[in-house]
Length: 600
Image (spheres, rainbow, N blue to C red):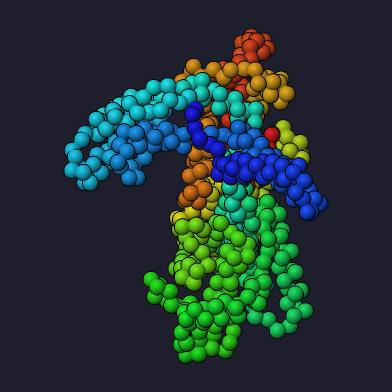
């Protein structure tokens, strides 16, 4: 596909390499002429330039190598192609609509471009030209640049452009995936992301209210890390005002050990940072707002009104103490100005939305960041409900301790495995691995598979069901897929050799459907990077698993003699499709923080 995937870093490197090469040649000539009052100085400068040149050349080579291995986002490719076609067809239009989506039905092709209707409205409003969407679609189609991914296009209905992909292009991308593994799309310059999540209270136990922030925040960190970002993950523990330092430090140590037990169970990695970390910065925050004239005094309190928000921030109490508003402002400034975050994400419940938006707006007002340059986002989420649709509580009405919830999950997962008689076929070690995989995987997936903006009902019965969109179903599907090659006596080395030599045939409609579904992974991840809605990944993994089932039911991967049961034929290209499916599922699980097992 004639697609521009060279990153900004590559362009910068190329330009600097040219300048450095020219400068080195200049220094050589300068030395040869003998006009050198400080030959040693020239040598040092020349050495530094050569070192920088070698470094840049290596960086450029690595970037190009990474780009060559990256999975192509087909949707982005098509948007680039159709964007160029629209620009050529209508050069006078500013920011014309560009809508490319996967087709919902095979008869409408593989993707659709639905820009013609929007362009019709723009031409009517801005130029008073009445042109039919179909006529616009035809004009766009005539201006599609040469490329390697589109087989043909068709105009349907009032002006939909149906796009059919080339099978050799899809086959080539699948082969690249099998040889290079699941690689993130090229993202250009490496950016720093700071994620604030979990944030338990010192001297209090973690409870079910901490579950969503912890699970969602960890998954977001994993996604950004996979996409090539430099990620810092913080959990800011809430601390009381304390007078007995020794006793308080002991309480903190005990609390952290208890928190870590839960983090170990859920495979959570973060930097614990108490509010006291920001304490010395708070007086400077108050002074900065005072110096810039934003502070008002109200009954002894120092408050800051932010335009558009009716409730002010209290940055100092009447007794001279600081507040959560002060510590949140200090944390915001530290992350922006000291940590140098390009993207800052707060995974905090929806109830804090107004407060956080006020803090963000205050930071913008005082000049700490420009929202056009730095992304500061609140990834809000709803509450966990019990099956009575009320806040999840124990029978006695108490808040559910998180450690109790995890232990109950382990018990129920083992009961489920024994009901399926898995204890009779798995070793003790395999059974234990399956128990933890199912228990913690199901708890995580039940949360992540719901739109985080909504409340969700916590039900062990539903999350442990091995039918439908659950972790239990997906984990079982994954172990089945991994077992196909193993039962055919095909090992990893044989699969790697086949990936290099075999052409993936996609003639059967179910092969074609599965191949396209596998390659949608990068566009799914890009969507989540944009909107931070992780349930999209869960929906995709479920779609991938069900699409694989359709393929497996209709396309023989391994053919056996009906009488003897002996293997008579192995369709290697189909085993490669199995492997590609499992590889993508494994990476999806990793991003969600779920650990699959080989036997279940």
